Length: 202
Image 1: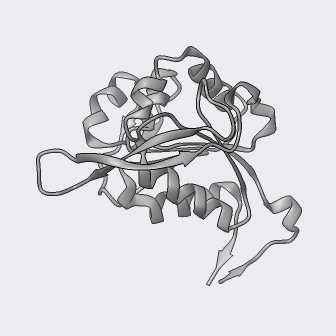
Image 2: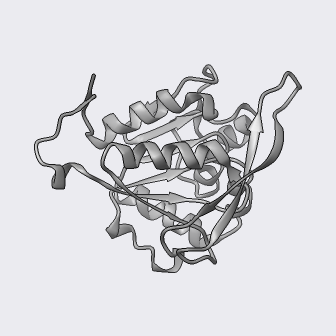
């Protein structure tokens, strides 16, 4: 793999990831590691928690039932403090799914943070239940958005143009990248890297 960059210092972006207890394990672990791997800096924060503290994760799997199953995942150690978060310090936002977005959507400071990223026209990626936070922040009206299928009604009620795509697909609308679940990691991370201007050549 050849990372094609004109200037390593200029190419690396500073990315904020919003998490909470029982965030989906794959949806926080994999993007965090992948974005670091290609040279970006990723700060992961959670309301009410400081750098060095942890969030619990949940593993959502598809095992032939009408909906996903849920199991306890790893603990994820936060590397930044939510109270110190300033939108101006970041180039982009990532919102993983799991159980966390449901709870985070009740925190007005989180919704204000998301609105600030949108107002600043910065790239945003949200996967699985992550778009619940976009809906709660009322920032997706008229936008093409994917999400976990069980979130379809929320997307439509928020005015989004809900995209019923394959579980391993992703949708880009301007600087907004969304996907239905963790099987879409290759698709949405690839699209998000293009939005960020990150060039990777095999």
